[in-house]
Image 1: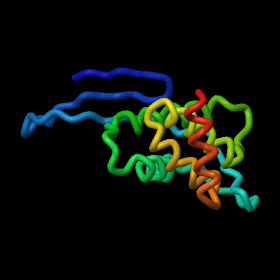
Image 2: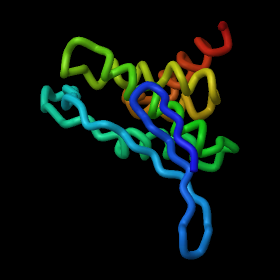
Image 3: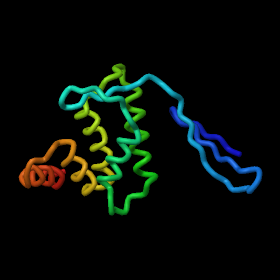
Image 4: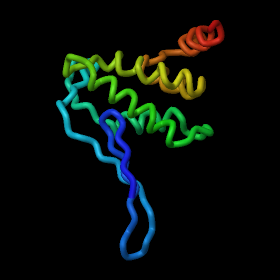
Length: 135
């Protein structure tokens, strides 16, 4: 029925010939593999679904539409694919996600930051919240 292309994703509206129901498919071209270098120096293949689950966990019970979470995942993945390197530190990935979550919802950002920055106690939360309040 309809096709739209944006950066590395093709969105297609389709219609079942039998039942006439409409649905959307998203097509993404396979490209070079990106590895995430974890804090303990292990290398792990970038997994957009794992990233999405982490963001969903941070947004749990908040009024954030799934579409906005998908947009963050798409933006982060696009940014990773534009880098010259095929490896990225997990800290850099966390900061990139945090940048978008901070704009979307402060509570989701604090939840996400507490995991990727490994907050040890209430003081870490306090510092991060004070940083948000200053801006």
